[in-house]
Length: 274
Image (cartoon, rainbow, N blue to C red; front, top):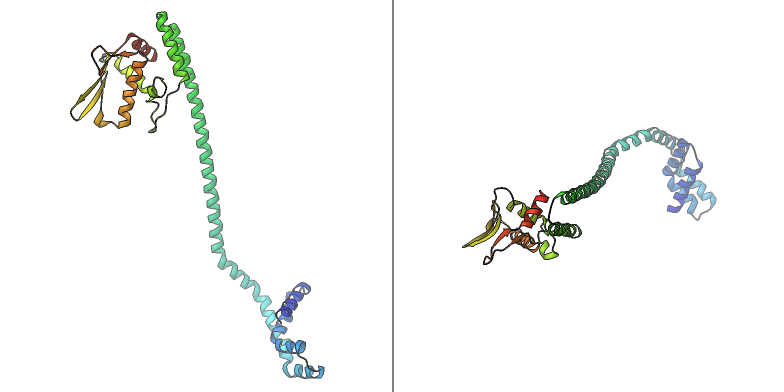
């Protein structure tokens, strides 16, 4: 039964091109489905089928009602379709707008990441160019300085060592303050301490003082208190002092464990770095 109606509706939809005529046929079947079912599937004589058809089908169910309903259906279908589109247009528009906003946000994120990556590369290139210029200026100043041969040679060795052994980066993001322990290169913090103790008017020594409840490092006119610094920073300063001593820029006077004086070589290096 179900398959028969499906085949009938499919045949009407594929062969009947007029919407009105197709609607008339479908409504005629709807109003006379019991009669059609009896004629198709009952096992009675043909005469009995004609008698049943005459008793259950009339002019109204065969013509008037199907045509009337088909006309109403054909005329009302566009209005129903328009109403349906108006009802769903709001949610559909919101869904498409959400998809567009998501796509725009994704593209904006990609663009931002690309710009950030390009900016980092540009910064790296600029830093490398500045380092190359600094090296060229430093070499020029070393060559221009009227230094004893042994000091000039020692300084050149130190320059080469600094270039071949870059500073170590620590976990907290500071630049290579533990360099003395990692490989022997002079760290930026060691250079800063050297510039402080060789500055004009500064005390040319480094001193570590320990007292009850703490300790402090005095270098030049500056002081670092242990209770106001992190453990990492305090260790970095100790490594920097050892770094300067290792490169023979400072020396401990005899009998002094926590005092360092600046050597002539330290003044020469600071002069070149200034």
